[in-house]
Each structure stands twice: as structure tokens, then as C-alpha cells.
Length: 120
Image (cartoon, rainbow, N blue to C red; front, top):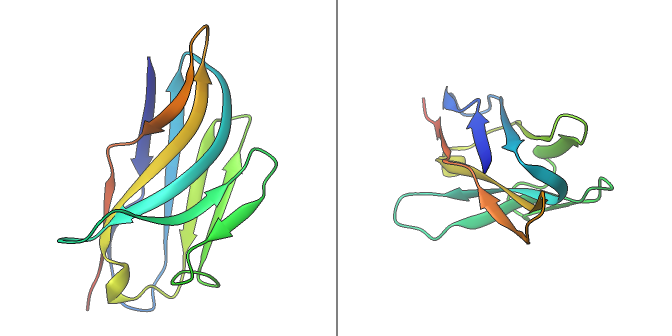
């Protein structure tokens, strides 16, 4: 089985910073793309940032220039450095990995989510 576990969420004041991390573990053959999504109360889940296995990144317009996604392929981890946080960044943040299990098929796997609250 494959597990994705996020960490690093919490309460931060507007203008502050947080760093989220996500580690994938289990019977993993290869991880392709990794991504961060978020879901605010009453809203649909939205894509925040993605990163390929080669390190190519994309960002939502709303976070470009403030957030940075990175990954460590050797450790099966993906991180999201969030700077200049705004109240509208408040949401549950989820990591997603597109991967192939050992002896299995390729698919998307999700973490359980970590709460980020930006408030004074």
C-alpha cells in the first residue's frame, strides 16, 4: 500500500510564511508528478502547484511569486514554501502523487490534508 502524509500546517498571521511537506511511502516503483491542492470551506478543491520528476513547475495565478514547490526524489517528498500569506490562502492543503506501485498500475494518490489558517 501507498501512503501520503502531509505536515506543516497551522495558524499564521497575514504576511507570514509556512512550509508544508508531504512524504510518500509504501510499495512505490516510481513517482511521476507531484502536486499541492487546496480546498477552502464551501469551495471546490483547486490546484495550487505541480512539479514533474524533472523539476518542471507550474503554479496557480493566485500563488505565483509567493509559493514555491520543490521535491526530493530520493526521499519521495514534496514541499510547498508559502510566503506572504493572505487570509484567502486559508484552506485544507492536500498533496497528490501520480505514481506506479511495485507490480501495480499507475494512478493518483492523495494525502489526508493539513489545515492552513491565515488570520490576525
